Image 1: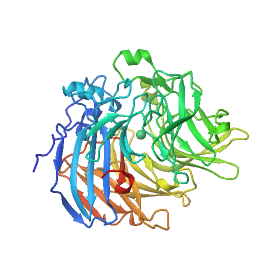
Image 2: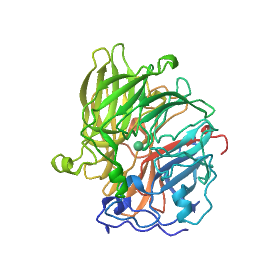
Image 3: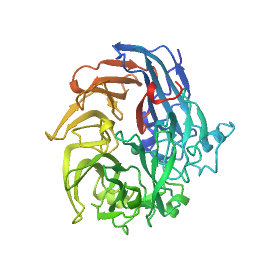
Image 4: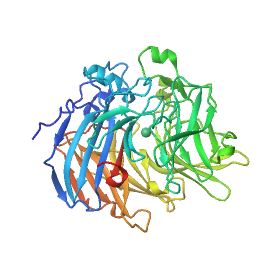
Length: 457
Ligand SMILES: [Fe+2]
């Protein structure tokens, strides 16, 4: 049995290097895993997670959570058993250079940067993703990095960490920006994993655009006032800052190919948004549910207004350009997820993780939007959940008929469990808990990759 990864401790002045934000020091493969409860037989696949794991001790004065080299973690479930857990560095250019390994094959210049933000399947293949201009890195089913990818020669620029699949068409939609470009690409990826640029849209302030949404008729572009700063980049800090000069706006890009250039812009509230929960159309409005935050990356503003992460609904009238904001929950949340089969469609249930204004994780939440309620799922003292991932049951006939999976860090043991909850019995004992004898650092995103999502398992 391998030894437990480096103990998480508070040793740095930088919160993103402390406790369970601290990197682990080794790659491991563990095949003997202790399980409580019964892993559902239907769950055949990999529960993957990715986040930053700096290879070398970064400068605590300039290090930001978004900047570390990527590490992918995975738990393999099959036949009701937990077959393995493993973690591997994602071999971006920086990582291969630091590890004195041969660089990955690449179809063109990679644009640099660590690939550390999301991991999912596209066209039957597994990819590690990041935003701001880098190419995706293809992984094999054992989570080893294979090559940079331009989606079979079809991706003209970089990609994004937050593409979304339209289960009505099987296509994936994405908004891709790059730190050095004043345009963004609206991309549509077909079932075979080939990308086409449906529109290129001018964004003169070079905003950070972490996530996107779509409805039946529109792709939605969040052009908010966190923008690239060369001055900050040169200083070695995270290169995006709050930009008072930029008028926040939301772009509605018609999905109809012939109209894609006719973007409808409306004024947005002054805030940052990392993540969209969902969006859909009613007869005369657009519903856009997001987690909005206060003015990121501006230390002066943050002194006055501590950062909040608030789940809100923006109800938008495209005819008069009016936007009405309604708060959906009193809790400070992040990493919103839903039954992804309903992305772009009317829905009722959302799931989030606690993320407080001082960047502390904690319980999970289930949001019942029609009732306007939030159910809290406490994980116990010292236990904090990362992004919840909903996996629908086969032949499910209600929206929340399925499981909710999450990596849960336990500061009492300094290890991480993977929990599987029945999403309809959110506050009951988990269906199963897989006890990892290692620590999985807080990271960004996880996804359930069913064997049926991959060409090769
Ligand atoms: Fe994200």
